[in-house]
Length: 448
Image (tube, rainbow, N blue to C red; front, side):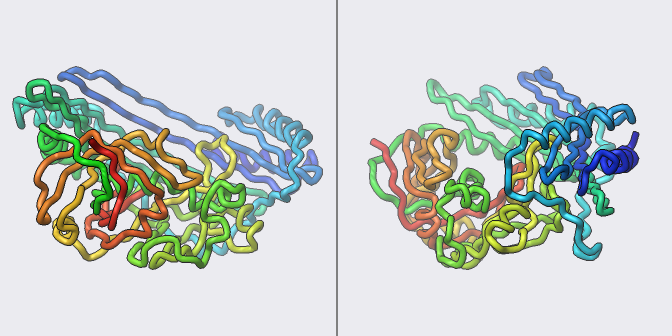
């Protein structure tokens, strides 16, 4: 049975059982991934998933249930599970099902490339082998190269008993290489990524070149004396920091006392040159969508503007608690997951300064090219971090040598309050969080 027919049957039978407002959230996804190592395919994944969550109000409580079986005989089981679930719920937060907005409130977002599903598995395998071959051909110091590519596609549907019927289709692809180079006993590793909905943009030679060139540039790296240094956070590191601390901008986290931004809306929290946007209508990014997990219309908004916190990210429940409007950031990690809060396409807006211009403005200092251990060395609640890193020493505005075996430490919000200039080189990696390179006035570095 298709989702719409299944939902209609659910709503009809649900009313007979005493349900009031009801909703169906359905998701279907196809995933593909292939990896190669030393010319051999070392991983191959082809997966399909489809599931549906039902929620409905009965006896003043919200009941939940989910299924992967869309057959007619599954309707009664799903409703009975929801009745039993509601009976044991003790929440008094007054959850509501969104009736829907006016049709023109939903922005059209074209997030599906019809050409991507036409790329065959054979073409993808040929691509990963081409990337690997290019990497080995670039330099005889390339010791190993591991390459993968994957894509996913899906449809999300939200239907409710008020007559709301929303559907959004999307797809996306991403490729990756890890290159290890070796000179004597010195071994270094680097990574490169490509992500888009257009597979013709996946340049094998360019991707291999980026990873190998950086790995080679790190050979001979040494530490340096401990101290406070001006630093340029390269764009991939800046986005890694933003990704690590993105949860701080969730109103749900703030309301639970899990974010330093509680009560800070309207206050300056960063340098005046920093603006952070949440933009769900960027068609080239993976989280582009016209509605959120509650069916609420999504919209572009400045979360931080000129260093001032303009809004936290809200779903309808957190917005009701704070007496504000939802920002359209309700999120479900999976069809059967609870509704939370998460950014869509979340990024620091680019400035006017080129990467080389940032180095020139810094004069002397460090480029941080990689951070490691964010899962253990960064505290999303306090904003504090202490992370192993590597990068390059800069003198006279020029890179003079690679640097490793250092630890950088500080506080995310304090660091972004010390941003002196913002680069014009934004990068999203393979995901939905992006940033350009950032010049930081001073950062604590532990070395020798």
